[in-house]
Image (cartoon, rainbow, N blue to C red; front, side, top):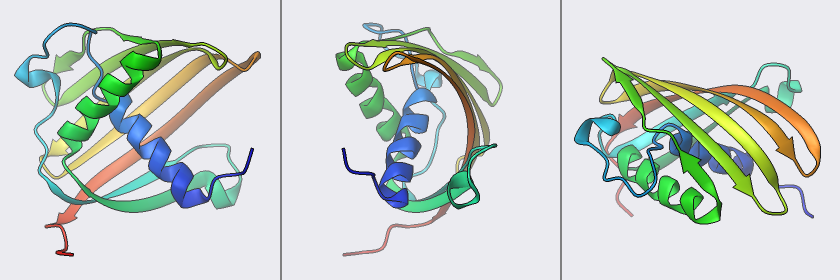
Length: 155
């Protein structure tokens, strides 16, 4: 299996973190406050993983998107592969999400995400995951900060 580039890996991890930040109970219509209100535009995502090698400890990428829509799309995709989601807990500007995934031939994990909204153009999410992946125990923690840089550039 080829090794993904740091940018590709970050894109997958950023989307996964966005997803984990926006998970809700499957089959239940989401309340309007289940997702934070975030502005469409060019966003910069910076991921940090304590304990990783210096070259992968902190990675950054930029992408033009609607974070709320991206969260919903990722939620739907993960439901299709075997994830189940507890209803989100919302306390002010702090959203807590729990995902329980049992993906055949991959493993079983539980991820707890805490998303803290600074405003409609900035948030931070911390994700702690543990379980068994491809027969091996795993436990990870990472933090991603997201900041809206402005409007998307025209193509």
